[in-house]
Image 1 (cartoon, one colour):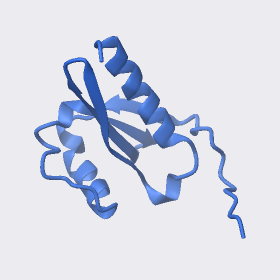
Image 2: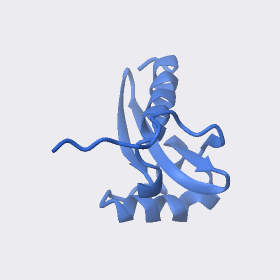
Image 3: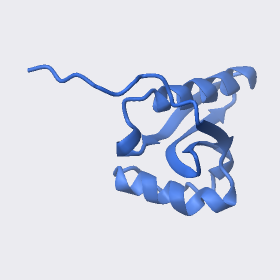
Image 4: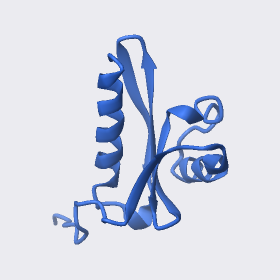
Length: 104
């Protein structure tokens, strides 16, 4: 039996994307930890993270680490209650665009 998503694949219009800041650290670590993703070096790479907020709630996070002409996505995570709405795709698109503009 195939499962179909009833959620829209378009991110909600009230979604706001921003670079992660120091005050986002504990929320980012909690979200990644709850998804079983590593958190050991999040503080060290916080400036590479992009967060997605729905109103004031953190609903998504992702990071891109650039290494010269190469870049890799890491720590892509969306709150379970907001999955299936295109938030991860929107985070990744923004980060990949930034990496391309930086020469990766």
